[in-house]
Structure formats: structure tokens, C-alpha cells
Length: 574
Image (cartoon, rainbow, N blue to C red):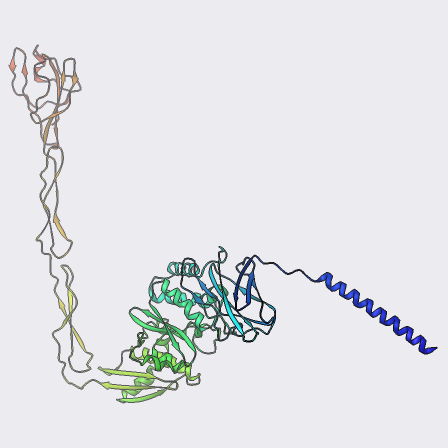
């Protein structure tokens, strides 16, 4: 009885299991999604294998999914995408974006039927992709498809647009010197960029639109900025160290600049570590990258860097401050007339790659200082290493009398100021000088500035102007008053007052049988002159000469019937 019961229970359980499986199968069929469709597709067939790449419309700043699939041959496939390339709008110059050595796409996928690869495009321009398929048939079939995608979005400008905007801002905010602009662009780039610890992003596109880059990304981005600013630059590579940086030409001299190693927030020592590698010589850069010496000592090396004049720590005054700290110790050695000596470096506890560079910069500053022993000049040459400074010194010759040279005019005399001639002792190393006063030259009035302008009764004249042939001093040019003139106006029958006439020009009318009814007479341009005049009257002819007549007084012809008495407004100036 128990066995029958057990068998029945087994049959019930088996039936339930079968029913559950049916239900599960139905459920799977119900949730199985339809194959996704994409907006874009490229295919390629080789040796019976059809490779397909599909994707939707890309959105800048968001990941684009590339769906890879293949049919034919063996159903088992592997997929692979090489490092994408980028070019700016309107440009055919491509830039590899990812270091293929460290890229997450450097190997084929595991065997699968399909695979989704993702990539985020971040700048307006054109992106170039190459996808590979490896069909595991025998023999293996593998080939690639190239996909080119152009994208544009004002919120995601091209690399060149970002560079142009940065350079324009740089030009507005600096003095315009190449040093100031190169330093500003160095700071601007390092403020935007973080070192890519995955060692993937090696491009200017990655540095300027993703904020990530290896040393290659720093170097490429800085090169683009410098080139756009018109500052000459070259790429420097230490292949043994697998590192790269820039050589920058400032004021005609090449300097080594490493933005990557300057991009630090560390502040362990008594200087700003963000500028340690701005403006180094080749020798100092080789302290940080020893194999750089193999490059800069070759005959074909084009960017030999020997100057520290535009080194940041020199320009900001740190080097001079450090050099001054050694003055007393150096002067004590000079007082003892030592010709070769060493002084321990104050920063010998720093890492040698730090102290070696800093002491090389400090030695440069020491060499720019004036040194003496008593009144004698000293020729001193300092060299810095990680732990000490080495000095080579030569002293001036002893002498009891100064031997003066012919002298040099150190301040030229002018027409009004005295000059100075400076004489220097010619004894080797002597620093003594003496001065001699040079007399003022005085003016040399040989230059004609303007000729005499004669006056007229209408305008003033001006005396001749002469000037000094050595300076702007002038003499003459006094104004000459207008010439004295007799001005008169006549009142004619039925016409009235006529225009003023001068100095004997006829007034009134002629041939019109009009009477001259009144006359106004005045002296212009000379208040010390008076008027005497005679008139010719009808019937009487010429009358006697008048005496000086006050304003408003009767004219001499008032008692003659041939001429009307003068108007009360008529006056004679005296």
C-alpha cells in the first residue's frame, strides 16, 4: 500500500514539474525581446563572412554604442576596435586619441556572436573608427570596417575652437611677451587637466575636452596652444623613459618645459613645485630624465637649451634670493684669495633630482652677481650639483697707479646741460673709475624755421623764426601789427551807406549823377594817428584842408550850399 502511494506521489510531482517547465518556456518566449534596430549600419563581406557595425545618432558628451555582429563561416567570432582618430572641422589632419599600448581595446574580445563597444565623442569634428572581426572558422577569417562620423554641437566645441579661445584670453590677460604668454598657457592647461592614470588618453582632444591625458596629451595640447599663439615649439621625447615634453623658444633662446611634471599639488619644499620644469636647460632637464643627454648631445639636435634667463624661478626672484643666502660664505672665500673651492648646498636633504635642478638655477643667479676683493674685480664661475656648489675664481692684478683708458661718454652734453665722460682703469680686474664734466654745447641757431611774413592792413605779420640745429629751441617769430589804414564809407543819394573802402580806393559813384551826402572816415590799426582831409564841392571846387575834427562835429563844408551838413553820427578818429 505504501509503495502504491509513493508511486502516485512521484507521478503527481513529475506532472507538476512538467507543467512548471511548460509555464517557464512560455514565460521565456513572452519576454524574449525583438532584435534592436539601429539608425546606421555598415556591412562588409569577405570569404563568406558578413561583418556588420550598427549605431544610433551620436550625442556629444554621451556614450555611443557600436553593435558588432557577423554571420557566415563559423558562428563563433571575436571583435576588436583600434584607437579612434579625430580631426577638426575642415581639417584632414588626424590625431590618434588613445595609446594602443594601454588601450582597453588592444585585444580581441572573447568568442561571441555579437558584441557592444562604447565610445564617448566629446568635440565637434570628425571621428574615425576601425572595427575588426575574427571568425574562428578554419582557416581563420579576419578583416575590418572603417566608420567615419562627423558631429557638431555648440556646447562641445572643436579642439581648435577651444585653443583659439584660450589664446585670445591669454592675449587679453598678459603683457603680450612670449614669456608671459607661454607661462599663462602653461598654467591654463594644467588647471584644466589631470594626469590619466589609466595611461590611455594621449591626445590634445583628450586633454582639452575630457580633462585627461598622459604626458603625450600634455605635450600635444601645449604644442597646439603655443603654435596658435605664434610661439615656436618642438616635441622632445625621452624614449628610454617613455616620456615627452616641449621645447619652447623665448626671446630667441630655446627652453625645456614639462607641463606634465609641473602639474602637481605637492608643496613639500620651499618653492612652488608647479614651475620647477618651466624654462630649464638641457643639462638640468637631464637630471630629471638622464637619457635626455643622449638626445641633446647628438649633432642633429635642433633645440639646444643653454639659457636660464627665462626660467620661472629666475624670473620670479627665487633664484636671486637663494643666491644671496650664499653671499657671505662666498665672500669669505674670496677674501682668502681662494681660486677653487666648494660650498655645501643648503638643500642637500632634498631628493637629488630636485636639489640638482634647483642648485643649477641658483648657480646661474650667483654668476649674474658682481663679485670683488677689495677694489679689485673678481671673475667667478659657479656650478651647482645636488649637494654642493663648485667655484672657479680668478683675481685682478695688483697695481699701485691706475691706468686710465681714453674714456667713454656716459652722459652726452646737450645745448643746455653738461655731460659726463667716464674713465676706467685698464689694469686687469680693476673696478676703479673716474669722471670728467663736459660743458654744455650751447645753441646753434642755424636752422630757419619760417621766413618773415609782412603785415597788411587786413592781417598781422610775423618776424622770421630761426631754430637750433641740435634741439627744438627757437627764437623770433614776434607778431607784426597790421598796417595803419584809412577806412571810409560814403552815403550816396538814393543808395545810402556804401561798403567801407581803404587807402585811396574810390568811394561813392561815378557817372550816375548821384550826390555824395555824407562820409565816415576812420583810422584803423593805429590809435595815435589823426585825420586831415579836403573835399571838392559843387560850385566851390576843392576846399581848404581840415583840422582834426572831433566826433560829431561839423565838417568844413557845412557852410557851403553845394554839400549837405554831415550826419550827426559821422565821426573822425584821432
